[in-house]
Length: 67
Image (tube, rainbow, N blue to C red; front, side, top):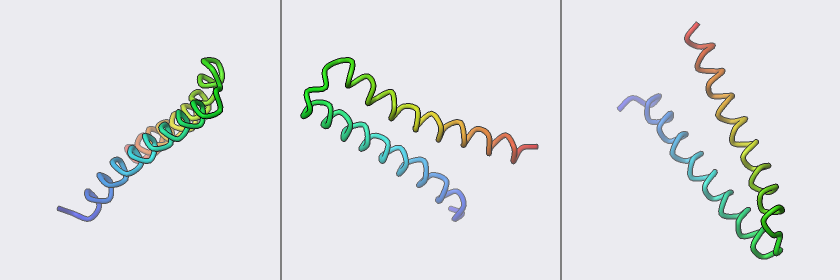
């Protein structure tokens, strides 16, 4: 396996694991602080925006490399 392919796979797997871990942390924070439905939604919405930014960045870089 080429190092570039390995690096790409590990980035996808490890960043995905980090996103899942952050989701668990946010859920635990919302649960312990008794944030309620709205507070939990706001916390996950903020996390979702960060994840969406990472996905959009990957799409833009991929499209620029293809040009």
